[in-house]
Length: 315
Ligand code: RIB
Ligand code: CA
Image (cartoon, rainbow, N blue to C red; front, top):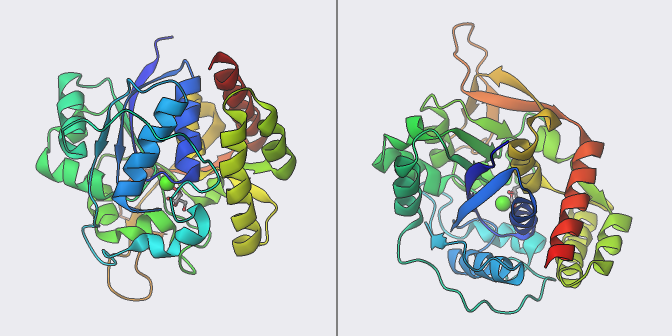
């Protein structure tokens, strides 16, 4: 079966970095480009981290384009103030990767995605694992891109409580205006929220076992060890939740997730509910998303560990 060409729009971020490695390790996907957005860390850090991860993993050839440094809507100042505690000052603390020689392409993320997708209509899946600022601007500035996408996959949202506020998930909370705009376009994205990503975990033993992998082991272990320590501090959990690589894994194996059409809305008001995702209970409400309700957690974990090991062996 031919590989699915994808573009990953992300805010690396430790779990974004693991999603990048999973994409590189998986013959089912062809990572055409990585675009970056402010979220877990500043745009500068996210972009540097993307370049570092790709070169360290042996793929400096994959183009990286920087996107938006500020969200469309409030809180559009420094959302990563809340994420420093999860991904660290660099956005990829613990990894200690060598600085990439590669640099970004001289093109804004939105323009790179638009040019690439419109050049291959119906072929490319856009996977968004950060705030939807770039995606909203892309679909606003280039309306033809939405229908030209093979698929849109979003890591974000929650119907089971938030991780940034009692109900709001981080990616949606960072730019609720952007998320509301994207969901209102009728593209019916696959939306992979905390409902399933909280159960997509690696154990402490998995994290320590990864250290033994050749070449990439110490870096993967380092970032996940840092991430594990933050899960213990913030959630009292001795596991690492793999939010972004689960979203990407749906492209690799759609049977990993069970999806339900839902009329998902985003609270983009300035009240305390800002960034929350909820189901529009109006009987006439049309579905806006293919919402991930359940997952095969054990199969996802096995896939992720197997692919990280294969990537390290090949490096
Ligand atoms: O809520 C989890 C999401 O927020 C993930 O994408 C993680 O990288 C952070 O961006
Ligand atoms: Ca992310």
